[in-house]
Length: 389
Ligand SMILES: Cc1cc2nc3c(=O)[nH]c(=O)nc-3n(C[C@H](O)[C@H](O)[C@H](O)COP(=O)(O)OP(=O)(O)OC[C@H]3O[C@@H](n4cnc5c(N)ncnc54)[C@H](O)[C@@H]3O)c2cc1C
Image 1: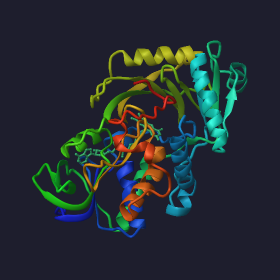
Image 2 (image 1 turned 90 degrees about the vertical axis):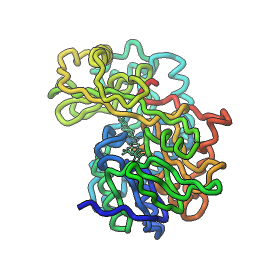
Image 3 (image 1 turned 180 degrees about the horizontal axis):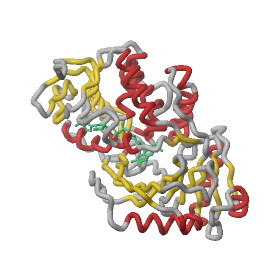
Image 4 (image 1 turned 60 degrees about the horizontal axis):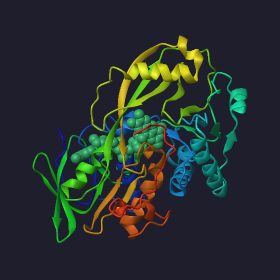
């Protein structure tokens, strides 16, 4: 039988994707155990985390994104020690390919920033890309930006581990509970309402609703520009005409990408509408096949056997939103990670726990991620992405 919903909790977290789960874990580490996480579906079965590939890269164009990756990488590298679970790291590296001088300028300035932050990155000429990975077509390239230490983890295993550890620390996770309202008193969030007309009092409400975070914020009368962006992915049959180990290859112009997955390959298809549509669009497979053959001619002989759709949680500048709106106390947003929420989750979890426990972020300066930046028109655009929106 389903347990009854509690009437109150110190902290209510809306959404149990990787972000909600990690926040709950770090709250318990700070001794805050009266935490309730409400999930409208089943944990790990919907939302951005369920589609995630588990990549962690250090190549970003802003210091805050790079630092979030570095903080999180430290945690994932010690994951087995801390949690007793192998996070399944595959050290494939990331290779971004630029096809225009303008893009190449962005990578050059990014590599200067990365060097300042002590993150190794190699700027490769097209000839060098071809020498290392002869299966890549390079005649249209301006260059390749390669980070050898990046790679892939097992996102669902990591999500389950955080949920388990947060539960052991006293957090209650409840599935199939949809939050439909935020209760407000005197400019402060004081609880939530559910679809089944339950009212739960809360000292603090955290909006960790991923692509739905804009909707959840609007329940509190706030404007938070986070929208779902549909992304197609395709999986090929066994394909051994290229090596078993090679980096995640990303064409930054189109957003097409390729990574090894077992004996086959995952191919990044086009983005689609800004909606929750699950439909694999008719033209998406053709687009993917065309881009794949253009970049990796051997893929002419690969067979796509499956296609599916996931949803990114996009902000206008491709950076997360962390913090509270000045007009509403005790309502903290931790969402909009724009396609890199898995790799930034440990950093985000630590920081949100600090905000709740100590009233300020200590691990990293989160001013650039404040929710008011959209109204202030003070965006910090991230052009190095594996999609076009
Ligand atoms: C195809 C694809 C590949 C990706 N690959 C990578 C990658 O390699 N590396 C990386 O770092 N990131 C990747 N990402 C991005 C990453 O998956 C997300 O940034 C991250 O999972 C966001 O986590 P989240 O917890 O914020 O959101 P979600 O996982 O979407 O979780 C939000 C949860 O909130 C719940 N919810 C929403 N509204 C309500 C409500 N009203 N009441 C109760 N519950 C609610 C939802 O059901 C959902 O489970 C990828 C994303 C996609 C789509």
